[in-house]
Image 1 (cartoon, rainbow, N blue to C red):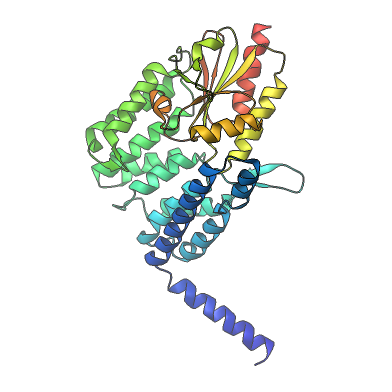
Image 2: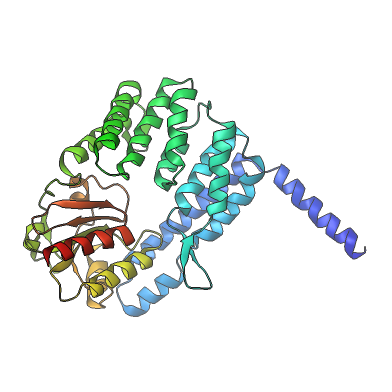
Length: 359
C-alpha cells in the first residue's frame, strides 16, 4: 500500500469514528474523568509530607486531556440534541483552564471550542427541552455573550420551566455586572421569574427555589456597600479566629481549596497580592475547604502566607452562600464590601484603590 492509500485509509477510519460517536462515548469520558479526579482527591488529601505532596501534584489528572477527548466526540455533532449535556460538562470543566503563551501571558484554554458550543446552542437548540445543564454551564463559564443567550432562551423556548431556569442563571450572570440600579432591577426581575415558573426544578442536590433564595440573601447581605457578616471559627492550629479581627485593614477574604483545578495559580495570585501590599494596612484571610491536616501542611511549608479559617465541611462558606471555589471579597477597614467575585486583577485593583484612599 503506497503512502497516499495509507493516508486515505487513516482519514476514512477517523471519519467513521467521528460519525459513530454517541452519548455512550461522551458518558465514558465523563465517568473516566470523575473517577480519576476522585482518586486524586483522596491521594491529595492524604499528602502531608513534602514528598507526598510533590507526588500528589505530579499525579493530578490533566483536565485538558479529558476536555480534548470530549471535544473529539461531540464536535462533529453539535447540532444534535444529545450533545447538549456533554457540551455543558465541557464548558464547566474548561472554565478555570488557562494556557501560557510564549511571551508569558496567560489566556483561557479551549476558547475556540467554547465559542463553537455557544454558537451551536444559539443556532440549533434554543427550543430544546434539555437546556437546563447548558443554562448552568453558560452562567458558570461567564463569557460576555452568555447573558444574551440566556435572555433569548427565556423568550424563544416554549417550556416555562426552561424559561425560569434561564432566568435564574441570567440573574447569576448579571451579578458580575455590579450592584448599580439597572443591573439590580433586572437581577430581581429574573429571580422572581425563576421562582414563579421553575421553583421545583431540581438542580443537582438543590432546587431553583433554594438557589434563588440564596441569591436574594446575597442581595440583602453581600452586595457592594453592605457590611460583610462576621465569620467565627478556628485556624489551622485550632485557635479562635474571627473576621472582625481585621478591623482597620483592607482585607481580601478568599474562599479556596487545593482540590479545585488551577489551584496553584490561585495560590500564586494571592501570594503575589500579599507581597505587593506588604507594609501597607492590608491582609488576607482564607476560608479553606481542605482537610485540617492538609491545611496545616500548606501553612507549615509556607505554601500559604496568610491566616486561614479551617472549613473542611464548608459551613462558613455556606454562610456566604459560596457554591463555587475560589471566590474573593475585598473589604475595607469597616468590613464594607467593595468587590465580590473571582480572584485576579479586578480584586487587586479594588484593594489598591481602597489602600490609596486610606493613605
